[in-house]
Image (tube, rainbow, N blue to C red; front, side, top):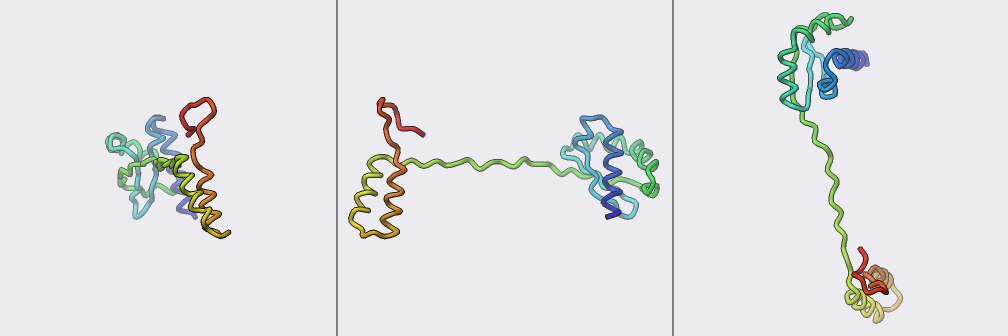
Length: 135
């Protein structure tokens, strides 16, 4: 818990002392044996961090608990947005619905008959104006 608090303090401190466009891409990943891991989502920001290492080390040495930091470990971890799976809509033509209803007629009252009738009820019904079936 103490380490998580220290890492959060380091991240907040660093983000407040870098330009806003860099701050939103800067994360502190961990601290181990005097090495603080900084993570960014693009190589361009990593290059900027490399040039700014001496200044950032001085900033962190001002924080209690971070006097022992000797260097940074810089890493790029691209953040990929979650892509929504495209919805596949299926259509049932009136002829298909009629075929399902015809099959259901020959069955006794059973779960299969109810399922076939329910499927047949999903058919695209042409509107009265003669337009295309609704989506």
